[in-house]
Image (cartoon, rainbow, N blue to C red; front, side, top):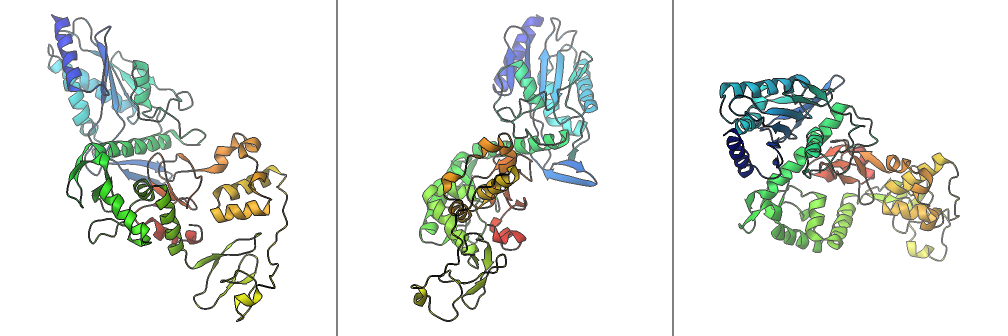
Length: 472
């Protein structure tokens, strides 16, 4: 009779939960259930660093894992044997939850309780633990609570290297690791000096961004242009204003603006809205060729008051005066004509100087640095420079072929030299081209590559009103 009750309960759980949330062990009455805890609106996760409490608004937390095994006399006289695993709860909080699950069984002895347990964990965990508005992360190691009376401390970050990713595992041991660290495909935190709470915060923010995108893709929206309903997977949402359009309508709108050279018109397609789509969104909509044109025209329109020193050994940015055709480089002191890029020739026409070219550039080929520090500095300049800066360095050092691969010289130091930490989630990010507006591949936040400021809304305004205006 008890076996029949257990079998009916497990079959019911299989029909209620998808294969991603419920895994049954066919050889015995056991399994695992992954529980997504419901959060109130405007919920925040916080991390205290020194005297500052940094807060981040989230909608999702990594799942809580309930592992269970049903004894022979369940549900009549014994509760399920179970383990709770969670990366963002403390040892005491997990113990309190585990004790309450046992109390729920005692209150309804003789009835099956697994579904009631899942309901409680999903709907009431935040209220029961009195963390209804904000979760402040601690540096305690991740723990698991066992109904058998043991409290296990999970392996450290170095010992448990299976981190990153969102693919759901298919085995008991893998699921436990997922509950400790829900990111399993690659590790963006390797090589970083992060505290356990900083690492946990990064994973929470990445998980939240991924779940937000998952919810968006599975929700139906009405396109604000053609008024046809589409799944979010076929739509684009402008983050600054929240307006949603189908990909085909917004793509056509953006392509027309870029083709006509009106890059400032690449905005939200809603009438009267001036919000800007993200660079990555524009690129996915218009394709590589049109995006190159868009990026070039936008850069020109943003930096129309900046010119580069024509000396190949300098190439520093110089601000152009509104009146006149003379520019003075503040780095090397070279005064030059902004029209012909030669030494300043007063009021004489540039054409008159064609037969008397000035030898203002330093054309001799320089030797590559021989010290490790010099090589690092050269490669950092080359790797992070604009296309114009790279061409300048290639010209100065005798061509692109003279630059050896950084891995051959710096080996494991390549990552540290060519990447920076995302200022939002702390993941390692490599920039291999384009402008200095970078999108984190983990949390999808935009930030300035120069000063690592998190950008939102009108990203290009940062380069017009800050010290980074010369480096877009």
